[in-house]
Amino acid sequence: MTNELMIGNWVMYKNTPLKVIEILSCIVSVADGDYRKQPIMHDKLDPIPLTPELLEKCGFKRFNSKYKLIVDDGLGSILTVNEINGDYSLSCFPIEFQHLHTLQNLVKLLTGKELEVNF
Image (cartoon, rainbow, N blue to C red):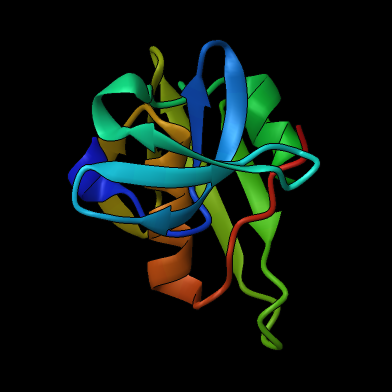
């Protein structure tokens, strides 16, 4: 997972979601909701599994087994996430994923915008 992390990704540490604010060779600096910075070894961090509830906290709206997000990119782009048996994929990008940081990275790659997460 650590080679997939980008600044702005959310990860789990001791059952607490934290936001990545800096990435060093073997340490990731993260911040909690109060923006208290703390360094943590890469191997102590866990990915956050995607769930329908978490997608909704990211601004996606549910339509059957699909979740849609209107991206504020000036074009009104819509991203669609498909869910099949706990695996997720973007309609426009045919790879399956299961973790929040992967979705965040794909949204950033495709739109240039960070995915907002409201824990």
